[in-house]
Image 1: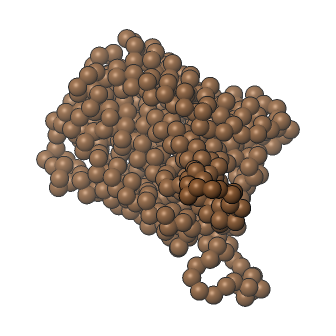
Image 2: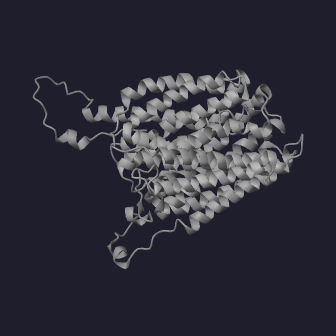
Amino acid sequence: MSTSTTSAAVAAAPTPPSTTSSTTSSTTPSDAGARRSAIGLGVVLVAQLMLVLDATVVNVALPHIQTDLGFTPAGLSWVLNAYTLAFGGLLLLGGRLGDVFGRLRSFEIGLAIFTVASLLGGLATTPAWLIAARTLQGVGAALAAPSVLALVTTSARNEAARNRGLALFTAVSSAGASIGLLLGGALTDFVSWHWTLFVNVPIGAVVLVLARRFVTETPRVRARFDVVGAVTATLGSVSVVHGFISAADRGWSSPITLASFVVGLALLALFVRTEGRVAAPLLPLGLVRERSRAGALVLMALVVGAQFSTFFLVTQYLQLVLGFSPVATGAAFLPLSLAIFATSRVSARLVALVGPRPLLLVGTLGLTASFVWLSSITTTSTYAAHLLGALVLNGVSAALVFMPVTVIVLGGVDRSQAGTVSGLLQTSQQLGGAVGLAAIVSVYASQAVPGQFVPGVEPAFLTSAVFTSTALLVAVFVLRPRRQAPDEISKRPAGRHQLADHQVSGVALTAPNAD
């Protein structure tokens, strides 16, 4: 990210008398502040990359983990879901803790827990041990992640820096899953699957040292903690996802499956009821009553839920059917990662030029097409002919979705609620991913043939296509631009698109600087 200087202010400052030809130091307080802000942004984005990539870094290692520790096929999905459930279920609480205790402090505590849990996970010798460590990783991530996005938005020196920071955050968050697959493949192939967890330890330690030096603490907000809300939200989410996992093992009519859904939905209903009554709710319901924000959160959950199937199913298809090694499997996702990075570079400008809705329409339509494409793979398919194009289309389309959703959700939010809304956005991602993966694995398992991987692939990817088709409908019917009164229209300036031109239910977007 480039740093900016306040040249006008420097030019206006009086020049001190000097008897020599030497000039004052080229490093002004503004330069130093901008440099410190840029380094601080880099530090928290490295942490964000580590938190996001950890959701998928063990994906490539799943066949090795299953063989080594003796997981059942359905139980194997808990290696992913234990992390995403703890992460998503506690994100709202993590956002509130950041508001109350300071986002830098919450970030540091969460990252320390995450780093220790990574060490414990790398030492795992049983399924229960690994799942417990992954759960603890999710707890640490839930404390740290909301503060990452809040620090990106509140520490920006101006609107252009905020937009650049959001674009980088989106790129890191979007591509982190694919980078995790590439890194996980290399570590599994050349070292051991244990190092997919050990690798977080040195990175976490370095980030913890640098964060205190280069990241500024945010003001604290006086507030109580909504313990009932945190408990009901977390347990309700876990119960619902457990219902989907149980359906894969026991069937949809199993008493345990039905009980999981009933208990989960009851707890989530109690959560909503609680949030409407307590003085300091974990989730102020007013934040989700606004149509565009609620629609964007639902759209994000649907898209991430569908995306998890790409990594979970394609990873195993490449190894079990096409015979790819772990490192080759990770490399096979590199085009998807590059497509996300390349598209994210221009998505911020596109949002400012045409508004978020057109990008969401194109992105969700492209994702749907990519999943329909992937559903056609067979035992005779090849990577170059049948997967490469679908993965590139998937990456480009995903990048067109994530940036507009981030801007819409954060638009018009008071700084005192930045942590809560950041947690809300990431909650939709993590719980959407957990529920989506559980649902898709359940569909896959219901059609699977023992000893064969491909039979369940088609219905599983078509289920992902249903998710993104629903997201497309949300973009069409929920994220409609608000109607402007005639007097508003008459006051709009002529010429190129301006700030008011691109609003979705009152959410304004500004273009980043060209640099």
